[in-house]
Image 1 (cartoon, helix red, strand yellow):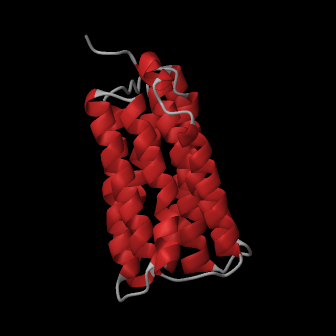
Image 2: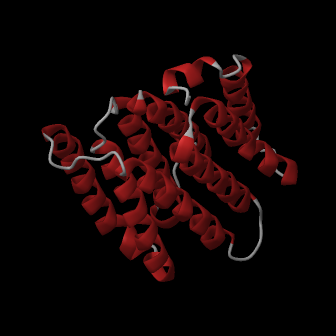
Length: 221
């Protein structure tokens, strides 16, 4: 017999969510203090690895497989963006592109774009996406094609979350938070430096990943 998502959630070791929060806060504090180095790059990925452990306990079937793939690719993207080497941004962006596609495919399987809720959520996403594209793509220069492809992927992910048939409020909140995090990255990199950008980016990013994980489980319940 296959366990239901609610039963699976009971099996999550109680220390994992707390450890995720502690690891995320530790990275945020040390990063804000200016600490750098390969070990900081690894610490940056630790909260995502912990979320993957939660997903392994909480989810099942193809939903678990796609979620683990998205989290693994996100951790890889975190690592690549934290290291200093030629082309790091493109490689990191590519890893996150694949993560967004994994999330998008996961959410689209349960999407119903004909329902009123989908339209009410999706219309603002499309409007904001259009306005951001007008701002960011001209500023991205030679990286504009890569940024455009990634932009389409994350908007598709957000629309899939918006249209999910289940109890998907938390899922949609996570998708919007992910878009906000990536928007901060793009504005900071291509348009103008933002104060406390690193902290704001990572707070919204870690919050987005956790909301997506728990939102997936709630939407399937």
